[in-house]
Length: 339
Ligand SMILES: [Zn+2]
Image 1 (cartoon, rainbow, N blue to C red):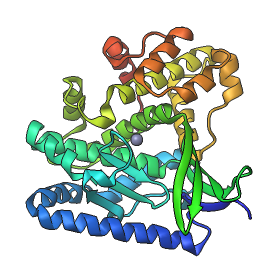
Image 2: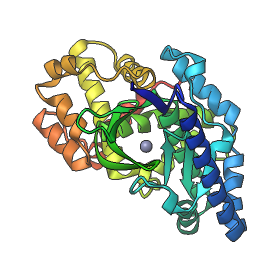
Image 3: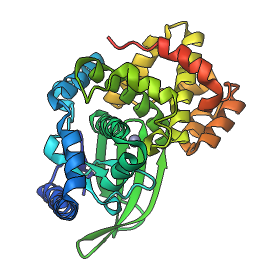
């Protein structure tokens, strides 16, 4: 038995996995429908916000970005509108997240509860911003190079090894196959937080480009980022301290590489973003040589803002916590190219 594709950019290899994915989509669609029957006004409000997004324009923005990264159009996994589901929070199994991209099923899930709580606490404008922002964030994961494969595990014949790559992040799981039901019995992951930092950077770029072209309830790129500075985004899970630190950390790494290699910073950023879409990964040996021994291993293991702070200290970066580098951030922002 060989390794089989079970999802990701190039899809599935066997019909049974296609069936599993469509079965999952049916189940989630049902849950979304039940939720809407129970809360027609609330879910309807979220749907109206999603409906206001021009998905053709958004796809165009992703096409431009991926073309720059030499990714063929047929490899751009732009999730169709009907594969976005507004669901109860229990459906989203990623801890602490209010939305998720599921690689094996090729769907984006959004938690209605989180969005409605934001609407209640922060008002409609804020909730609309978050919905647009989180959707774009999940689209980045979906469009980025992703791959899921499953094959035999050497140690046990009743267990499969599943490997998932979502751009820079890697997840390995051991799957026990019991009477047709797969159960994850162990898993390990790496570069998860670093990948979120890069995802967040790309999401900000896409968001800004999109808002510069399309009206979205009168929210403009400049009003949004001004609001972000005022901290209005800070409560959102995708803008948690960990994600924001990861984004700042990535920016510092890019800055360091730019200085060492004497290559302009935006060129280095384009390289990092290009690798995100191409799936080529980090040039680990080169980075370890340039930044220091063990750097990429520790970056892969980093799971929190505190881990990144330790890493920054050890490798002599400045403190990457967003609060302390606000001045640097405004400098970085002026270096971001949107054209
Ligand atoms: Zn994410």
